[in-house]
Length: 99
Image (tube, rainbow, N blue to C red; front, side, top):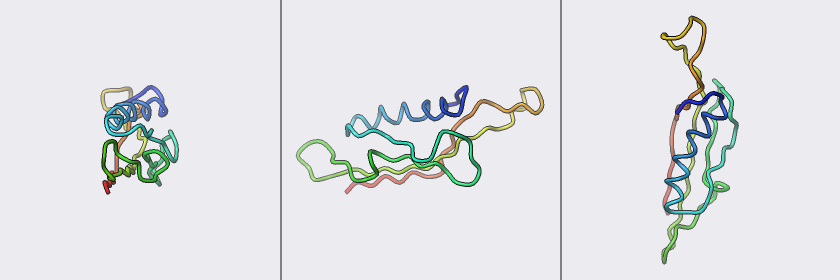
């Protein structure tokens, strides 16, 4: 889900995830790390404050979600040489835990 800017690419990535998460909890996804390209460390995305979020209904189940991603820019062979494609997101891992 590219964007015109790195921040827009992150928001385009977060929007569909938040809509899916909203089916099971009111907790919001939070970016922990930034909206800009990096090559050394991935950015973290957590549900709520990173602590277990109670699932609805008469259950003791809760959800913890951590996901790591990079904001990337890649060379686009169809563009002018030296010009990179719009910023995009690539995920490195997702760690959902239901307990």
